[in-house]
Length: 130
Image: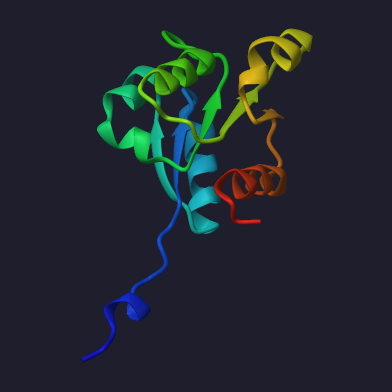
């Protein structure tokens, strides 16, 4: 009888992706899936927080400026329910306020337009796949 543990595929780290721009969200999702990640993508922070599987994510990749709930509000919501994994902020408007203020809660800050290799390197570090 074959050993199920040795024949099973390695677990793919789950990434919680929250981005309100559908084209950007889909692009990031495809990049990370091609890299071997299980990506759960949402168009809003509220939808992400409503999904019970959100707290299973190995890391968060979120836009900063979204309608209804910012990426910072999303991170605070996840922290409020005990989620303590790395978080990556993506923004089109990087500034000192984000760098030194609210953005300090994030492990990485990436500026749009994103470079695929930089995004993947950040997610690899966040999930321990270095």
